[in-house]
Image (cartoon, rainbow, N blue to C red; front, side):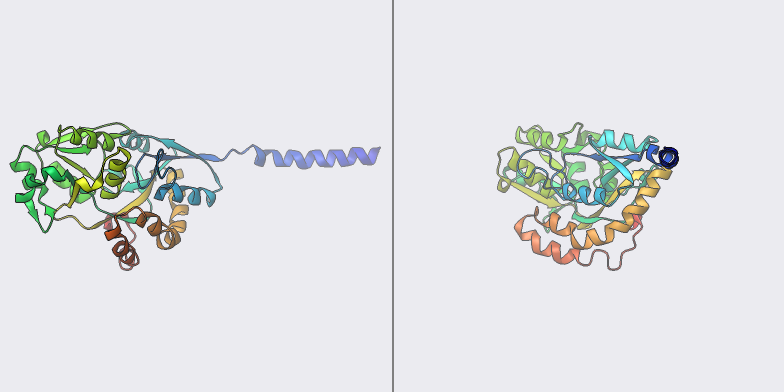
Length: 295
């Protein structure tokens, strides 16, 4: 009997020693996502098959030290949350000097085709005087005409394009908020309430088809003076926890951005872009520095 008591006491001591470890809850990392094809797709054809839909499970599986939550937000709310003292990360952020004041960025994760101007082909003649090799002089176009350009509020389209937008008259821009901002802008364009929408052609093609329309009725024009590719990052709130998470993510991204992510992105491109993109992606990170502002 005494031996049993001693064994039970020993077991109790061991269990008591384990209690502090058992009681330590993991930090909860909140991932911010938007309905942003071809990166995240919440509904319809391709649901769950976007680039980030495939990236996030891979990151989460290799970061077991955290509990993970995925939260859907629009761009404006996402930026607001990143400014709060929370443990929050966004897997599809462009670097901008304004965001760098409150976001800690990963190394570049993926090169993507830069945004441009989408117009219905029936209105194509409106752009003709402002095109050079199919690239549009956006500043001259919107400075010299009464055309309206639809943009998503609080969204960055790259440092280069954001700077052009800042130089345009406010009357030339139609800003839209909400979870479905880009889709709503395309509907406004279809109704003739604006002529131009700024965006990424893979995203536009997907949304046009999702609305039951034909992408062949639209034309996409890159913007003069803008690099062909821009680079996405994972960005976390600039807190000790956010910086620690980015340190871990930076160890995971080199393999993912070389072997996995380009193929997920290329499948959403127009056929004529597919092969060139995959060839270019092999050299995205050959000579470029991995500091976010270099991209």
